[in-house]
Image (cartoon, rainbow, N blue to C red; front, side, top):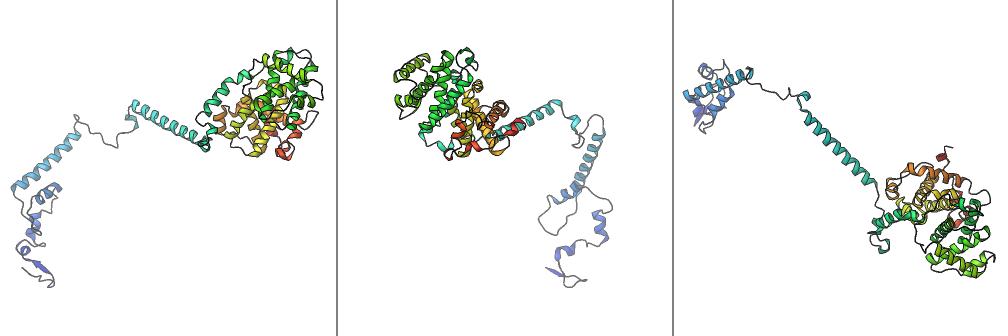
Length: 399
């Protein structure tokens, strides 16, 4: 089987290595040709196809030498071909940006731009809150149709608007008389504990009627109480009696006069009572603003102050509602705040609201002064959260 190594008696050497050349022998060095390196392929050629006998090295025959020579010639031919003019090999390192075709660069730029736009659109969509997700099980919230409803309100709100210069056609009344009437009606509305919808509709009926009919100043208060009566019939569950309005007007008019004015008004307005008022937009826009009770009360205080002002008739109801909420946010937080969600649902940007909002700040600032303080006193009570005492957003005026 084997014998011990002479130099190292403890080392066992296989018998088959005894018959071959020793590692230190000159014959082995000559056979292996260590003086000149051979190609790795030739060594592999010697190994591939060898018998599966470990520790046995076969001598190369003539066919193996021929294979090694062929590999060497092939390598030399490849080097000469690289250097020739007929064939040029382009290395990866030599392929710089200047060699890239223009259409490739243009296509890559377009793809990068598309990716950037998609990321921006995803960020914009993510920033808009779904304000109706909590009402999916509430059938009264009509989540399936709510966007269509407000799209219709926005489209048809012009039908309920009046000319901001209609008072020029009145010969016996003016803007100040209108302001006195509305300030008084806000007190009546509060005393009767009527719904908010009733107040906004009543004032809309007054302006639309005055735009179409000339009224003397003695009948102006009659127009006001009749408009409130009509709004109550349209909005309220429990409607005050005609006698209640006669009494609240200090018996200045009779029951017959109120009923006659009622007939005149509904015929003049062609029984069109369903018009979008600022109140309809307020509820939706407050929801989009994720408002709390404090913001809601302050927003209604600001917009009711605007009801008294004749010059605010030049703004559509949806803009008034959005600007009131924006102004209230600025008053509460003392910095500009208009979220992507509010912009999406109101369709108004912050820049579109600034003009109206600045006017609201000036009205807020002087609401507690002068003779027409009905709104300020109403919102200075605990029932309305002392909203009138909030600091106006004077920084919007540059003060």
